[in-house]
Length: 281
Image 1 (cartoon, rainbow, N blue to C red):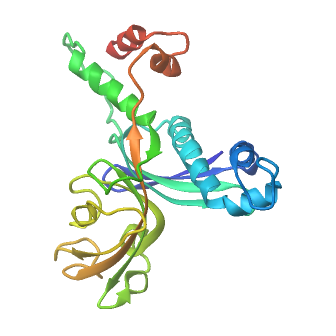
Image 2: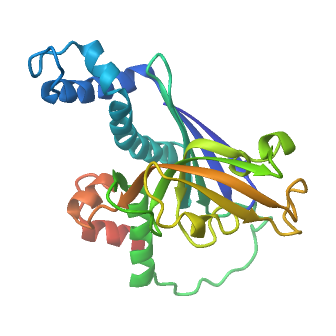
């Protein structure tokens, strides 16, 4: 797995994660075999259709299963590899599959602030009696749960707060694509394909999230975004943009239960009380 980290202002970082063909192929084959065993294809007996027929007919379904299985797992591994102190995951985007069965995607996260300490040796210091509270331990456990979350499809309803929307969107101002108007700004302003957006108040572009609440898969909406006059991108500041937004999928984040099995993922052969004790010290 290849991981590149692009740091941005205000404690934001974007991870570009690439999975090699051998890793993706292993999971691809397992999922394709599962489809082959159950698929009913005209002209073939159940379970006897050739692999190329199965992959052609169910390619999107196989890719969707791969995305669910590999994205959350590789994201967690990438965060651990780069030793990032992630506060929250805000977006997953640009999930792509190469012809060689490689896979890549981008994850945008908010991290704890980093700074350089001034010279501190020799400064007299009286250490207070600091005790980690139960509330602080609980908060730390919640952050670990968020990093271990899985994503499941929610096809039966419209978008709700805390969902992750997988969508295509393109922004225009006075009919001109923002990608042409401001080619050097963040892709988040221009638009994107298979963009993962977490629905939270004040997240993403001004008013964007509120206007896609209730949207269902395969539905397309036009979202108007009014950029304030002091918006840091001069090309769009004080202007109104229209985004055509097509929703592909709704993902719900499932947090693992707080139990000994969860603790063992972070501290092998240890229990939940052991993990709480480690966080307290």
